[in-house]
Image 1 (cartoon, rainbow, N blue to C red):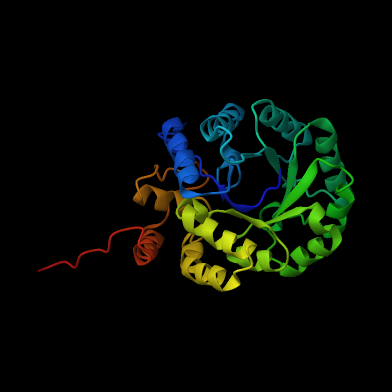
Image 2 (cartoon, rainbow, N blue to C red):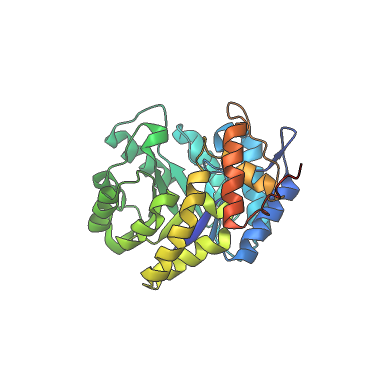
Length: 299
């Protein structure tokens, strides 16, 4: 299976500290109806770091059940513990995930050899397509193109979510790995530029609130219609900024709450969006047309 297009990094809806299963199911249905090309539960946007193991598994199960094979589900199963990543990935394979996304081990700060051995163990330990996830800004380690190239010895490693924001690094990956590796932008701001240098899509935060438009932008780029894709990029650009007013996923959850899709609740140590940034977010959503324009107050 070729993973491409606009893949949404799903939020995990919460209500009074608990997983809101009904809201999650509704979000999955919303994305399928809107033309999203793939679903990613339990990524960074899904607050995977603060989900219990049981919650993590349940989110993946619900997403797969509701998607029902209509679009691919890439389960976020990475960890800074190789054994934990193996356990989560084996579960994802058992319940029918189409692939797993595996973040580089954070906090441990492994060497390039350590990263290679980590992913080798996963590739040899579970029968499922694997997508590497490189985001040094969160993990403090950069999975270098030379190491990625080494990992192509394992057939199950089929893609990478590249979150450095570096077009040079993405271009190096394209040069080294060619069509063997599906290169997905891990950053909404660089989704279109990544496509232009040889990528095949994006794993998107902004797609949580405008799935149809993100899918249309990436589809236009896939077809080589960069004039149309650039128009979408320019229109969506202010929303990308709004989604990162504070630490993800607080802004996108606040936006979804304003759109009546799910609660804005996040789990500590994350907290609700500040009032000032909430006002900025509301204005961005109104300007785009996702919220009604505010009426002037009459004295």
